[in-house]
Each structure stands twice: as C-alpha cells, then as structure tokens.
View (cartoon, rainbow, N blue to C red):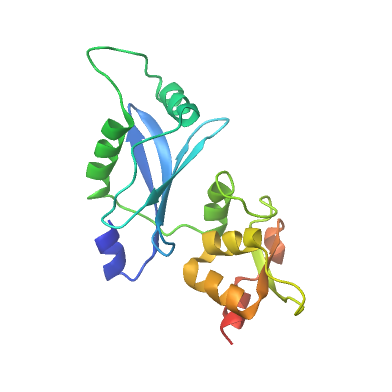
Length: 187
C-alpha cells in the first residue's frame, strides 16, 4: 500500500479492515515520523488503537493490558487453548491484507477525530482548520498545538509552524473552516 501511495505522491490513506467479522476503520500516516497507524472499531463506543510504525514497517505487537482486553472484547474472542489469539496474529492478518488494499485519502478532520483519542492535542472537539495566529515574541507555539498541527498536516507543516512561531487555529464549526489558509504559512 505504501509503495502505491508513494507512486501517487500521497502520504495518507484510509481503508477498511475486518478481523473475525468485526470491522475497523484504519488511517495510515506517512508524513509523520515515525509513521502512524490508527485502527478504530465500529459501534456505539468506538475505540481507537494507535501504533507507531518505525523504519522497515516495524511496530511492536505488544499492547497494554487495557487495549488488549478491549480488542478481545470487541472481537468477541474467548480463551481457547487450541486457538490462541495474540496481537502478533492480528498484525500478521492486517499486514497481508494491506498488501492489496484499496484506500482513500482521509480528511484531516477525520484524522484529528481519531488522533485526539491517543494524542495530547488542544481542543480535541475543534477539528476544522481556520487559520494561523502569529505568536508574540514572548510566546511560543504550544506542544499541544504543534501535535494537533502535526496530526492534521504532517511533520513538515508542524516544523514550519514552530520555526515561524505560528499557532494553528481551529473551530468546531465546519462553516468556519478555511483550509485555503494553510498555504499562508509558507509565505
């Protein structure tokens, strides 16, 4: 999948995945180092699992016990000594699936909706970009704002934001969105 993304000069992908007849919505980000993969369950109270993907597409198959039991619960798996489940098995299935997956380009607002469940970003309910704010010389762009900018637009834009000491501005009102203003940071 990532090779196909590179050919098409794309850095983000959204795709569906199913395991044990349970659907996941997935987002892969390659414009952030290390890369990120978000797997979100479906249903009334969706859970998002975040994985950092390092060089060579390596991630840890270790999950903390809370995430592990949430995944087991969602997959409706019970202990079976003859058919043991492990995160490694889950990732092996996912890796094989990704080889030929059809993906779409995710909206930055959709990325923020899942990232805020695992990342320390400011104003998680505000997912629509509406401009930039030049900080005073006595102020610095906050780490939470930089993480939100990075999650929404990647490392390059976040580095530029930090370099220019400019904070991204956000709203929860889709009608106030102004994505065209992203380019004004580069000038």
